[in-house]
Length: 151
Image 1 (cartoon, rainbow, N blue to C red):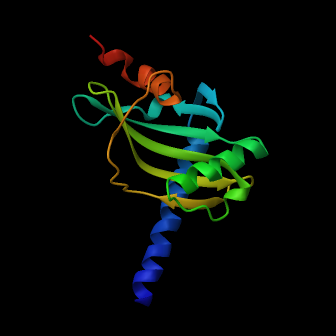
Image 2 (image 1 turned 90 degrees about the vertical axis):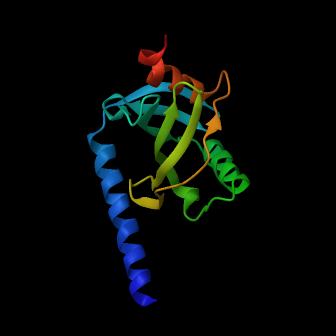
């Protein structure tokens, strides 16, 4: 049991280090703002993982106390952990976008505090793809990521 716990902590730390390294080397490009914060994507991270599905890293920056409170409320509504989120500054997401069905699926995410230290990380999420609503921040990303696959 203790070995499994140590392994879990080590893997979480390694996932956080990889994502932090990726965050520092990424070329973040602004693609939108909404009530929860400002959103960026890394153009160089976009890759096709199948005929119609593309993968992309995004960064969600939370700058105000109001945005932070709304973000914590959002996490609570989704039954996601909120430990340390009173100090959250940004979040890195790895998402898959299906360009033919206009669906998005979160595969991993990491949250960081104002000192860029990891707060929480979750990888290999097996979440169901969700439809991308029109006029949403996800739709703005969809248009960017899938523009070259449109007929």
